[in-house]
Length: 224
Ligand code: CTP
Ligand code: CA
Image (cartoon, rainbow, N blue to C red):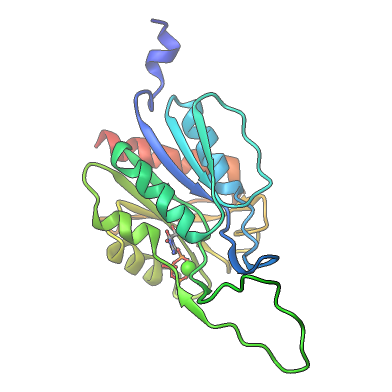
């Protein structure tokens, strides 16, 4: 067996990663979605695979492409589809990183035919989707569980409460207050908060470089 392969720090580890938005159907031709590009999750998948991990990448609708023999891509549409796929693979993985921008609400009733336009205002009743990350925290065994938090205010406090509420090993905070951070950008500025509430702040970087900081934290926690 060659030296380079045996030195890969994530060799033998299975990692589940979610990425991208979800689309919640209104009728056969319309949906509720968001501007997540999926870029952050795809970069984490590539970085982890390059370090030897076997990656299950559960992706909502996204134009991102990936071609890596260690990455198994599972395409999903809705929050419920993503929930089902995550639960299908979770028992078998060492690490789960939930970077997807999952819809918090979905239309309560999905029209079977295209909704026709009328003069009157239209209301669409929404119901909550399942919180995938929280559901994985509730059944966590050996897995290292990593979440994201996208915040505009009281960032650290909100992220810490998500960390605790969802039973995470660490959370990656994206503050939308930081210029160049977030959804539609190629860069990100993150703070990592772990279960002991230690905070590490990183500089504004490309999402590829940010993915290395996140994967590095995963490697450290797996070794600890
Ligand atoms: N998440 C999830 N399933 C959901 C909603 C969120 O798995 N239905 C995950 C996201 O992938 C992310 C984390 O939960 O890792 C936090 O998402 P975020 O939207 O920041 O937090 P919420 O708990 O949804 O709270 P809010 O949107 O009100 O801030
Ligand atoms: Ca949310």
